[in-house]
Amino acid sequence: MAFDLEKASQILGTNLKNTELFTTAFTHRSYLNEHPSYENTSNERLEFLGDAVLQLLSSEYLFNNYPNRDEGDLTNYRSSIVCTSSLGAEAKRLGYGGLLLMSNGEEATGGRDREYILANTFEAVLGALFIEKGIEDCRNFVTKELFYKIAEIIDNQDYKDSKSSFQEIAQEKFSVTPAYKVLDSWGPDHEKQFRVGVYLNDKEWGIGEGKSKQKAEQAAATAALEKIER
Image (cartoon, rainbow, N blue to C red; front, side):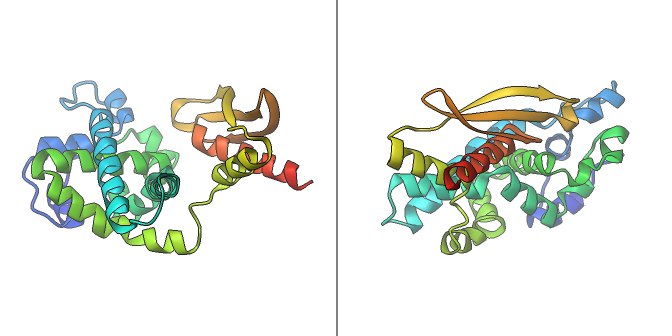
């Protein structure tokens, strides 16, 4: 499967030149298993770089646009905008799934629409964009394609997820910050499941499961909130 650099240029709104770089950005690691002679690597290193770029730009945006909010609020806002579900939704909207190079097995199980794969690809592509175009193009891209929803998230208080809510209650009532521990994990890499417990002073308050550690932690925090309500 040949990578469509022209289509990627249309999605990103800029004229891309480095075919190899952006082919790598859209290469899921499963593709390498079925194509041992494939000359590129997977997008995992670019994902690492893109994550750092995204952390910087989101922090800068929030710092400049919300001068009266404290560090705790800004951290919660940033977490809500750069989380897996947020990045996955934008990558899906942009059509990243159609450009992904992945194994037949991964594709057959819905890999092109899988949230965490799309979220990882969002970061990898941002890393590639940083290498080719620089920080200003990255800033323009995420401002248009990601940060547009920050105001709505804040207005709706969507940044107050279960983990944040439980932490606020735990600190207010018990002066303790919740600790999360992975209790178990199972399944193949592309469909990994996690069981996580949340604890206050080593006392278990909730257990949750999910397809990522983050989702399992959210489920555990939700269970803990339900326990407090009871």
